[in-house]
Image 1 (cartoon, one colour):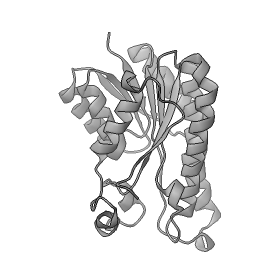
Image 2 (tube, rainbow, N blue to C red):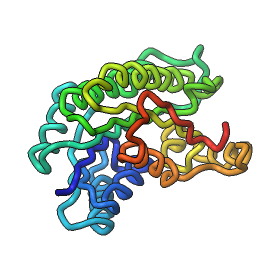
Image 3 (tube, one colour):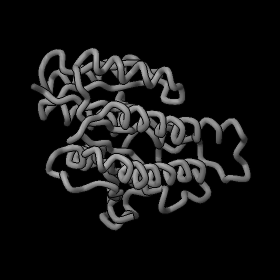
Image 4 (cartoon, rainbow, N blue to C red):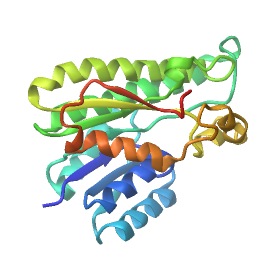
Length: 245
């Protein structure tokens, strides 16, 4: 029987690449989106081409809303049965700014989505998963670097994800549930345009020690390994996928 992966923020970028990779390896995929139904449907179509017909579905879910998160998990279980892994990926970044120039609405939106939302998803995963399963939280190398002059609010929100990973791994380890995180660096996805810097990848990628930006598939490969049984003794780890930044 096929295993099931649940992915928040699966309609584009790292979430989409991760969904397609799991589908290619025979998993059922339940993915969430917050606004772009067309993009989510495209991800499902890619998953079905990579896997089998009917192995993917998308559900609208605002991770800031408790009822929406619970509904997404319930819909995934109703469609596929037991959930065998969760990728806690949904997140946002706001336009480049210094902290002194940030208004309260921007900061609340970033923290409500990236921190409260991630904690709600992790909480529901902790309530739902069974022994032998795993959670991967998607953090950012910004948690280490701070993103001065750009997105210190985003960086702080991702620092909270690192702490969540370490603490939840210790809570769930005795239940046989592993919890890890990846910290992507400069990855060629749409998130940079969302933050008002579509040129950021081209500008900063060559400055990485590996001399280039990463792509979403490279992050997805790390996520897949952490969910898989190949990482059966790995928990509480935060893995940088950052080209050495």
